[in-house]
Image: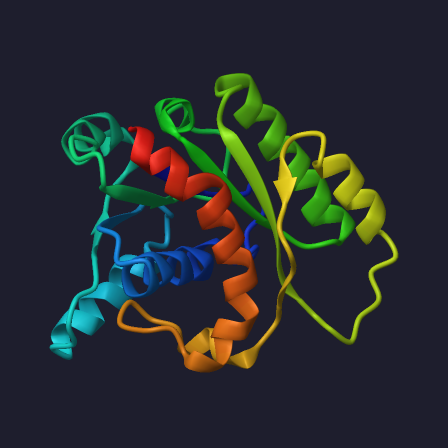
Amino acid sequence: MLIIIGNQKGGAGKSTLTLLLANFLTLVKKRKVTVIDMDYQQSLAQKYEKTKAAENPENYEIIAAGLEHFPSMYTVLSKSREHIVIIDLPGKLDDDGLIPVFSAADLILCPFAYDEFSFDSTVLFSVVLKKINPSGQLVFIPNRIKGNVRYDTASDVETQLSKFGKITPVISDRVDFQRTDTFQTPLSLYPVILPVFDQIYSDHIEETASKI
């Protein structure tokens, strides 16, 4: 199964969300996972190398790769029915190398915020994604939402995004997100992320992975 995590807007929290999901799938659901870091900054691959250097146990492998490497890599990684591949995408849509990645995705997770700029970028990402992969399951995740801020546009934003896919419960902003690495997720974050990831797993991953 191929899961891609992306949005055209930088700072949406895709890389941290990728770590959180990979940790959830390996530590909680005991699934085999490989993460491909295709973001231009490749911060996940750097975290992974630091974890290895500290001799912490590796829950999964993170591979730094460019979009051009995807077709060959996925041919190898997709051979196992139980294997879940997660890709952290670059934050741009102007690379033709995204087309085969979008086309192959079983599940697309799109973190977003309720501000106007994030909404516009999210809609653009969704339109492009759906043109390339109409059957892909698109799930929007309100990410790092501040609990003490009133978002007057939240209802309108969710109404528009629901035309493209499903919307999960909110992931509220916490300082502990900065402590997440490839070795573990802070326990204080579990009450925040479990309602989101449990829903995604039961609705999209568990059943789809069993059919591949």
